Length: 88
Image (cartoon, rainbow, N blue to C red; front, side):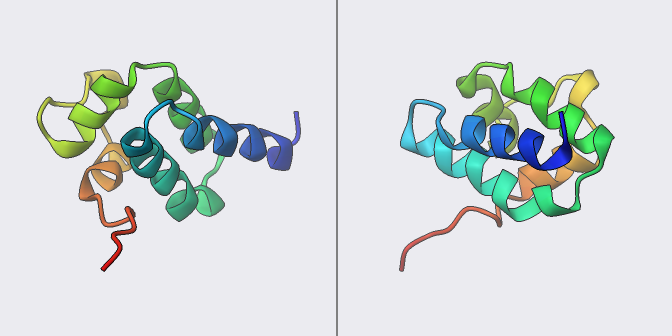
């Protein structure tokens, strides 16, 4: 599968999680960072999307530590939460 098709599929999966909160967190992260991703980063995100939303959100908010398999620069970026748009 080519890069653009893969990114389109990831974007859809990121923004269609089932709850608005998960969509904002996971989809917002995708929108902010995906343009710079290489193969390793896309593989990390694909694996992350297989996890339960409640777990992903707990990891992102710091309520639970990221599992060892996900730790690294992308997990750190995910935890910053500055990618979530907040209406003023």
